[in-house]
Length: 104
Image (cartoon, rainbow, N blue to C red; front, top):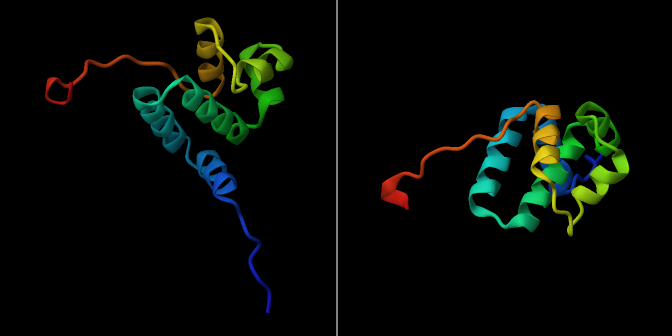
């Protein structure tokens, strides 16, 4: 009897983002709305892995891979230009919405 290989929650999450880019975008939007900078960077690292990893994304975003690793690190502080390039390479964009007065 064969046993299915165990997959970590992290690996399953990344696979879900690979299979469903809309889910990745919804996840990142939720983190941007409620998370702090560290949580946003963690979300970006997860999604980067799902979209082929830092080297591939750096090439697509026309960024240096070493710089992208540093940008997405726990101590990273991405410039707006870099963030926009990363999101564009993922097929996403940053959007602004009014806050619903009932939830403000």
